[in-house]
Amino acid sequence: MPETPILAHSGVLIASIQSALSDSEILSLRSQLLARISHKSVRGVVIDVSALDVLDSFATRTLNELASGARLRGAQTVVVGIQPDVALSMVLLGLTLRDAETALDLDAALGLLESAAGRRDG
Image 1: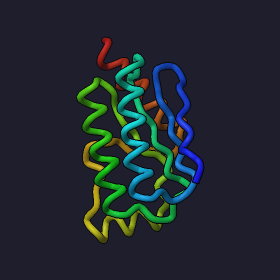
Image 2 (image 1 turned 90 degrees about the vertical axis):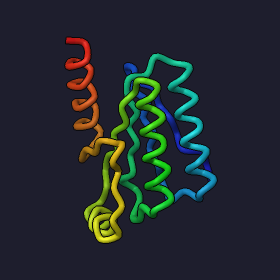
Image 3 (image 1 turned 135 degrees about the horizontal axis):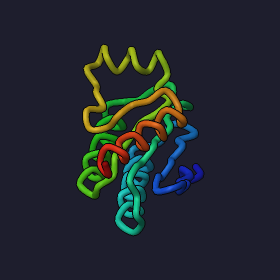
């Protein structure tokens, strides 16, 4: 399976998950993103999960770990594109993204990060 692309744009890392990831692949993505936060001046991380029709407990926990690690490095994490059925399943299973913000799409996520940066700088 190809690696999840990670783009850098104006201090934000954007990772678009194109298909379901194995446990080892999501762990690798977490490590890659945390390493890139350490080497660049990154204020935010956006994870696009719009292509996923399932977000299991392991993936959810790993995204929370990523968000916690990013926060400790000074970056905010936003998960975008959670499909309605995935959101309902997460609620029914008691899964939350407590350490990450959520947004409907990339534009909303970038706006959220910009707003947070303005509050922090102002």
